[in-house]
Image (cartoon, rainbow over the protein chains, first blue to last red):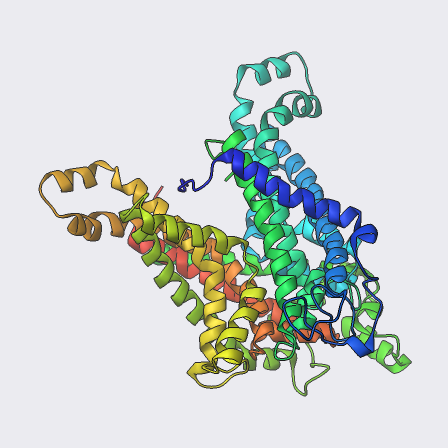
Length: 282
Length: 305
């Protein structure tokens, strides 16, 4: 799929990477940066708007929520869960999916049929529905969110890696390794993974954006960490019930989500133009 | 033709069997069902009733067979929060979900395909740059925030449309637009690619060189051939459509299966959760069947090999 390039790949990598870097640093150093304790309530300063309004309360740059908690601090702390879940679930699904894809590609035959038809079947089933069911059964905490989202997306990697492995399998260096008696695991580590790594990196980066969207969607639906946890989805859901009196609550959380997702997507697209110009990872 | 449809229909039970197995594994084996389904304040009577209903005293394979037998009868048990059977509760909400999904899909298809054609025709010009950029940006937009923004603007600021709820056509506008916005960017980009690729095909070049106008070639040579890639993509997107419908229904308090599912999880109404998941799975499976048959009708080469 060719798209008009509004920006060069270097711009995308630097700008998108910059947004991601700022978000990650903010998440790591949240206790140092956040001006308030994100759970500290102040019932005298409930639902105050931010710096743009004359009704603003000094010190609360983005205003306060229904319990008088500082919104900026809650957003900074909220980035921790989104980034942690996004990256960890990406790693889990990348490992599971890549191993499944390599095995299907190298073995072929019944193994391939079993793995890839299963991937097809799961592809047709909405991942968020599976995630909703699993969170409903297991309960919403960070570890479960990572597990659930990781399992719900492994087939994206399996398909990409499977396709690449099958074409690599016929290449002389893989055949030679096989003739010398190299096992599946050896071939995978020495010959397949280094070849698929660039494409895998691109797919994985773009998937982090999807994972962050899924995590915030689950939180928004009330299936993430239960309140009062400061997560972007929770803030958005709380804001959704106070749109008329305090629209800035939902808007600031929505803006935070879209800026981070946009940054990750831009970084991923820049990386694709750099490392996967032929679009193998689609 | 009829044979193909029959063969595809034969796969339907298999798909549903996989869904049944997944539901069973997720809701029965990820912990003690009694802990999952009943809250802290449970009474011993409730525990006994649930044990009997789910046959928890039987071995697992037997439990699964009983689960399948009940499924075949459409028997998910009685709803815990509403009076009546779970299947009946879901059935009552099905119309609202189909209405929303149909309206959203139609809107996404019409606008997405029109946008994609415009991009391809005026490729690399301002129109293309504008529409493509919006489409790419749309892929980063969380639909739940878009829904909230639409409510803020069209309902709270302008008072043109109701904020949420179910009723006349005015209630349908914002949910349908929100749902369409999830799918539209993909349809735009797929249509754009398909049309651009077809433009360099020999039969298109021939058509142009024998003097047909651009518009004529587009209408008679390119668009009929672009239908298939868009259709096969539509098949993949049915799942996304249903997932988007869950979120959209929750934002707008739309009384469909998706919102019912989320509410039932909150109330630990497991029979309704299972019935909702199955309803959504059946909608997806049937829609995929329809898409496959349509594809074969349009291009019989596909399934002959």
